[in-house]
Image (cartoon, rainbow, N blue to C red):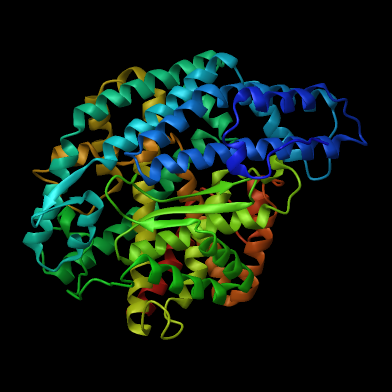
Amino acid sequence: MLSGFPKSIQEFMRWSWTEIEPFYNQLAERRVSAQSIGEWLADWTQLADRVSETFSRLNVATTVDTTDKDAEARYVAFLDGIRPHAQAADQKLKQKFLDSGLEPNDFAIPARNLRADADLFREKNLPLLAQESKLEIEYDKIIGAQTVTWEGKEVTISRLRPVYQNPDRELRARAWRTALTRQLADRETLNALWKRFLELRQQIAENAGKPDYRAWKWQALLRFEYTPDDCKSFHRAIEQVVVPAAERIYAKRRAQLGLQTLRPWDLDVDPLQRPPLRPFHDVAELESKTAKIFQRVDPQLGDYFETMRREKLLDLANRKGKAPGGYCTSFAASKRAFIFANGVGLHGDVQTLLHEAGHAFHTFERNALPYHQMRRVTSEFSEVASMGMELLAAPYLSADGESFYDEKDSARARAEELEKIILFWPYMAVVDAFQHWVYENPAAAADARACDEKWSEQWDRFMRGADYSGLEEEKKTGWHRKLHIFQVPFYYVEYGLAQLGAVQVWANALKDQAGAVAAYRRALALGGTRPIPELFAAAGAKFAFDAATLGDAVALIEKTIGELEK
């Protein structure tokens, strides 16, 4: 058994590679047998969890304050001085395990994943992957620095989001144009950064002997149960059954607003001219009311969230210098999760916290699995955990006076969120179809103008309903504002597939809420020990790409919206 580890993760984070390396060497030199394989995997887990948590904590530090030079320096030092060495040493352990031919119980899928990792591994890619992480920091810094002057104050782009809900159409338009003018000012900077990303990714794929980056990324993402052609089938299903439903939503909105055409700044305002929902005044209220919701969904899930509150594992408020978006990351050695968000007082912030908490609950539930390889879950199902939680929690938005809303506003919020599910699928298809084109045509995609045109083409194919006439430059550069394209390529179709799974979990909850939550938790606890279709099935859903399954989901959503709007 390994010994000599620091007692705290904070102490381990101060270690150099010279101090860490001997533990990898011990594992590499130890003999393994059927009797000792469990202890060996447990020791590997102990080491891997500490390295993983170090990476996560250092990365978090660069996102909570993109201006923190010390945090950036520590992260870069880890990327350069520890992570490549740890990845190379980890590869030796993977190969040692595979060569042993041993396989503990419930380890078939983890072993398959290790074989895929071993096949992709090239030591010469390690500095390139580190460089890719540094480019991701550059993207965050560019976006995080985007501020505007609004009503005499410097504010972040995110701080304009509440204005888009203002009934004053001229004010909304001015805010939208102000934001886009600032974002377009970084157009050439982002184009140059994009070219560096693309060149780096092509080299990574070439080094690994893959025909293109998509093939490399497909294997890196462990996509064994579906293909790029399945994704394109999903796009066509969305075009067939979801785009018409989205057009119906836009047509209703246009009529309610009394407009000839919908413009981009008309998409967030309440179409009945009701004031925007303001569910909380500060993040303390956001936390406390969300905590009560989780206790009602399931007491154990509520306890997980209280642990995060107590241990200050939530950073939810928007502020200048903070990276964009929201995420949940795991601290593997501490067996905890951390949630990052940019709350500004909108209902969307509530949804973000419910979503990211679903990821956190997934972390807590799978922590019981003994080996870190068993806790590795692909995004297709991890997003069911998050999107499923949004829908499972929805009935409790108005449970009593301590919740966010009364019954009327709760019905409004729920109907709006269900509409967003329909409106999201076409946008997801734009992002995913665009990325398939990029990596099928990397030479063309190196030209940002070609990317602009392809994005615009896909937008017109799927996003029918809003009028962008006179705003062609703003429309075609939309890919700049989707961080997944820059930072986590191909990580987007999972949201669409998982949303379909989550709607099925919700459909079960409409018949038996307690039973659906229990199945959801059982599926989360399986971690990565089952293939994707079996994880979906355990949660009570079907892993699908077809128009029929999607059509059933759309029909249920439209029916429920109608009931809520009454």
